[in-house]
Length: 217
Length: 217
DNA sequence: AATTAAATGTGAAATGGTTAACAAACTATT
DNA sequence: AATAGTTTGTTAACCATTTCACATTTAATT
Ligand SMILES: NC(=O)c1ccc[n+]([C@@H]2O[C@H](COP(=O)([O-])OP(=O)(O)OC[C@H]3O[C@@H](n4cnc5c(N)ncnc54)[C@H](O)[C@@H]3O)[C@@H](O)[C@H]2O)c1
Ligand SMILES: NC(=O)c1ccc[n+]([C@@H]2O[C@H](COP(=O)([O-])OP(=O)(O)OC[C@H]3O[C@@H](n4cnc5c(N)ncnc54)[C@H](O)[C@@H]3O)[C@@H](O)[C@H]2O)c1
Image (cartoon, rainbow over all chains, first blue to last red; front, top):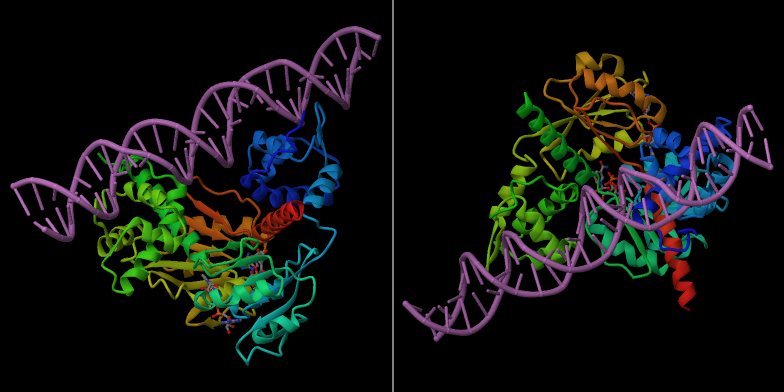
């Protein structure tokens, strides 16, 4: 009996990329098989959690043996659809947008930034690491067919205006660095990367820990 | 009876910055009081969750009235210690490091990047938006006293070597953009910002949703 | 082929987090 | 001062996730 037909927990979904990265690394190293406790050492997730997560995707392992690395690579590669390139648009070519374009997820050949847009005339017309920057006003015409994913690196205030334009152009997945919650269609999936909040909550935790240590002394 | 003496849940800690941002915004708008259901509209967190979260920090509100915005601002400002500036070091002045320096958490005057380090001689000696870039090898001498926070924007491979240097120099809180888990002291708090994983899991979710929609049709 | 050793996959329990619902507490009004 | 109306803070139920612990399955060995 397997768990593979059940809904995949959100927490598990967020770990799929970590698993894939570790499996890829093992494959590059020529490792043929791996046990859940070895994977646990690599990615710092308890082995029971790993086995439970894997079980959602079928019976990938063998008792008394472990997991075949190539089998895992195939399974997780399929989950992430790494065989078919995902073409991505960047909106906002400021410091962050530019950094993303230059890096272009180099480690992941399936993730490819193919185009960028900005409202600043000084940025429009440039080509950054081979990625053309077009005027945001021309997005509908310039967005290549098949691009359903966008990364927004625009100021918070601009975000609300950008989202509907993206949606009308066929974008359904958006990652944004502006933290203000934005209205979107129910069919659009948005992920917020809130660097300031991450830092602030990290600092809260660190100070709290320090206070604990001080008390013990 | 209040919940304020109990341990604060991790999930609540991660929301503190969101609360603070919303409260600040209300204060700028001259709003004097706010109810939990209004806050809920602003930050898209259920009002019951907001009240539960707030209760960890004392009885901040009044029944039949709501919360005084200035009282909330004081309480959450104290939690985040916004009165005392946190001085931050950046390690790695590539695309991402540079973008962080130029932005410098402008919206949050208490978060201040004061210094940067890199191993690339071409970068050392520069000043970016007033922030000096020093040689990483001189970190111990150049890190100003009182800097306990660092943001690492170096390649994954370099990360493991950087952490102990930071720890020896007195850094206890680290935010890093390289996703490989790194060995650190038990007194060091690390937060990983894994942009590739975020994008990959976002895409997984979006594709899954699309498949669902397709089935319903 | 039989036996031993090992590691998976998963019930079941524990932990962590969210939310409905409401008594109690407070404001506003008369 | 009494009453009506409002909203908090919290209880209790719920849901999600993690983790323990082990029956089961498979590999390896004799
Ligand atoms: N860089 C950081 O350290 C940092 C930290 C926290 C949050 N953020 C957030 O990340 C986002 C981007 O940061 P950044 O440093 O790259 O900002 P930036 O100001 O350098 O760049 C923003 C770019 O967006 C462009 N833009 C503005 N409106 C636009 C529109 N409607 N359509 C298309 N392009 C538009 C601007 O012309 C500019 O090039 C911002 O929302 C910022 O708040 C950045
Ligand atoms: N930019 C992106 O889109 C993106 C996406 C995902 C992950 N990341 C990660 O973020 C990190 C930074 O990204 P980036 O685009 O700025 O990279 P980058 O290559 O542009 O910059 C890295 C910088 O770190 C410096 N460096 C290397 N070793 C160092 C050391 N030991 N001490 C100090 N400095 C050192 C380099 O000289 C360089 O200036 C990387 O780990 C990258 O994997 C970036």
